[in-house]
Length: 437
Image 1: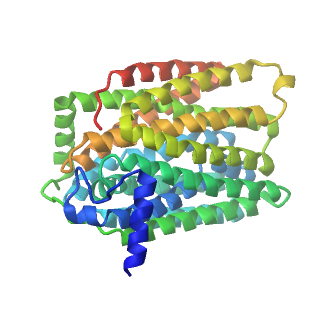
Image 2: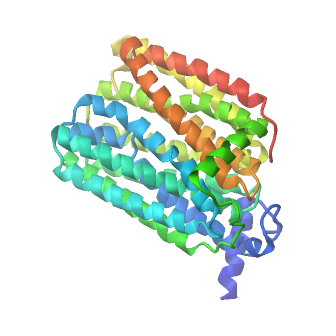
Image 3: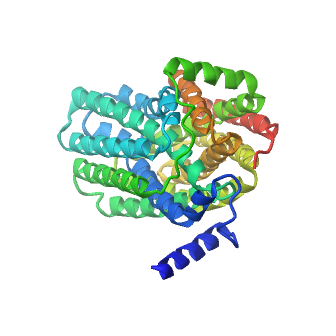
């Protein structure tokens, strides 16, 4: 039994660049001893989650699903706001419940199981759904999926903070993104190879694999060895809201972080519009969906470890670099939208731009996740994460609706320019954040 443990510890030290895995900054000694084992369980759980997220993506796969079953076009515009806001809005209400539990991984497991069931329901709708009713059911299942994602999200970050020490969390998230990118790449290749098969069957298969990914996520979460933590923070929803508002008034850095994060929404909001430009050139061909899935997988595989290591050094700088990259990508997208059709007659220019935007969006996500986990103390981490996510969920619904209206009124090119300006403001805001590592 000793040999595998020694091998696991050495691999952990090699992946994190540490010479001694027993040196931990902000977790108890008992948790530090379990850190190598927990690191790889986190890695496997995150792989399942990230792969499932890509294969049930509201930016790519679900629009194809709605098109395949003949749902009304306006429903496509509801996918990203529901996916993001549904996962973020309820989190502050769950925070009090989670903080009252010495062990929080059970909430993570429940969220993973519910997401797996929702993805399985989407796979069935790909086979049997049709028209407006089928589209409405897809949106309803997406609401349930997003709420379950919110449960997992807050519990995952809290368990991460309790089981993995500072300056190793970003590296963990980076490696998990890389592995998920490789798995997504394989899925894209399969899509291209079977592009002549019935679209409903291929989409159902993708969503079934997504369900399996979330099941793996729940299984690995259940096996993590979590040391019981403080539980006196548990309270009612009203008390949690009051405590959250107190934190916003008291903690200036937390307020500033949330402003930067709100401006960084531009990277998430720009992605579906770049994909939409590519869809206008290619229609709903599954082979072209496979191209976008492949470039997304390659981009995630390449970008995440680099961003993760940088985030452990300075998550503030990662947020700033990601914002600047978003501004450049948005400007390039606007240029593509305005070029003559002969210059952009295939999906490939948009696929390349989509890949670049996925890279910078990975930096935005890794930077802000690492920043808020490192900013918060062990007692308040769940509340910090939940409050920040709930505020972002409210903004996502409001801004998502405005962005949809602007896209309808101004066109995708002008909208991307506006998002680029917002990204520049995010870079300026992130520059003024203090270091927390």
